[in-house]
Image (cartoon, rainbow, N blue to C red; front, side):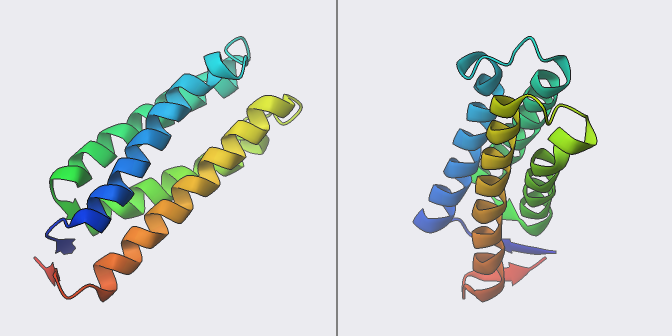
Length: 122
């Protein structure tokens, strides 16, 4: 397992993941798909999960946290088709957009965990 002593870049990336998680929680109300049960609950559950993982990563970033955020982002991207709410266009676009942003943020942090001289094995 790799970890990194958080520097400003790591705090930025983990803060971005936190904001994306909170945004995903708020998305059903903001974009108006709170009545679409599967889409709303998926956004609330995975938004909360990502936010909790990001808060943990703000304290000390471990690779498992970042991989979990990336996996959550992948699920959020695929959820409209897996859960059958792809006909709800706004919910689908919100999920795909947030999911891609989470994957990009987590991928950047994975790169930092592999390439940064301040990253180390525990």
